[in-house]
Length: 193
Image 1 (tube, rainbow, N blue to C red):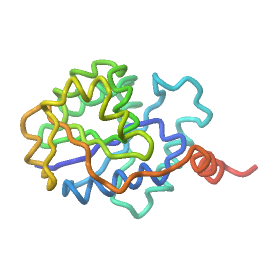
Image 2: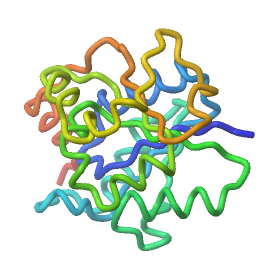
Image 3: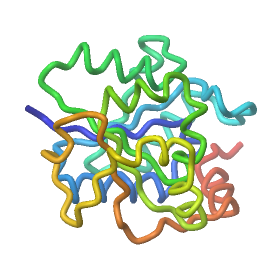
């Protein structure tokens, strides 16, 4: 059985925080692969300056020579929500165990995601610390609701996630990326006229 980490998002733009989470997850959990799931439209983000094809292209540029695959599954299955995508993947890839990867900032509003509770019962969730969001993430509604299912082992292993729901916060070096850096990254990736 293969073990694959999934990092979903609009990736507008893809940046070093996305790379860091991916590479850390692969190393810590000893995953076989990391898949980035580029969403055609994030329902929680209203304005989307970069086109879908531009974002996919930028992801491919940033991950070149890295153990990360860019997947367009959400576009292929016309999925608008992470839950739909996770359900599809679990049904179509019987010999793969998937892990949902995300930054602590996403845990704060996770209860607003469609079928958030079902996601916790469909896939192990691996949260990475992010500067400025960790305390709020730990106090979040979903964190409190699933506190009894949080794995707190120092040496986390994929086998710890065999029974769902199961989630953890990795004690990684905090991801520190400002919105200014993100904007700068977007400008670097934009095609020049």
